[in-house]
Image (cartoon, rainbow, N blue to C red; front, side):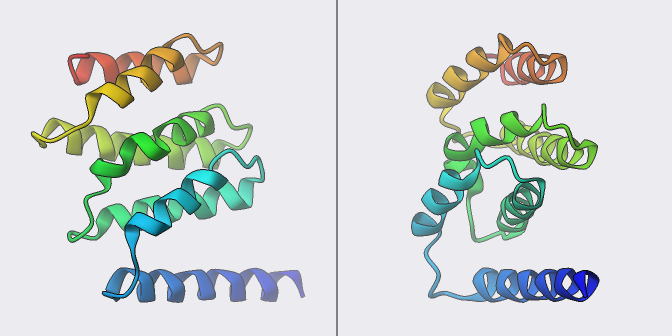
Length: 141
């Protein structure tokens, strides 16, 4: 029974993502605050769901997720110290993709990002502070 529920939830998630990414009616400006509010949830299933949404939205060429990066950067960095290896990997992959995009983009809000990265550089979690330092060096902050 549980497997059927999980399968149905994943199928529904894929369909909703397809609808949102292909629709002109959905407002990313209204969606990002909802996403940001939930990023501090500790439930691993919710975290997977959120990273999945960030990744999918970032893959849509019409959506400039770099413009919204300061809104969810802190949440992704929080996930780097998650007890679940899979969550850490997904958050790291998303952060790595954003770092590559930043290197290729002339329009990035470094002010808000720098604040988050400096705070994260003081983390007690080694992977989090190492990733933060890497970001600071790579973006010349």
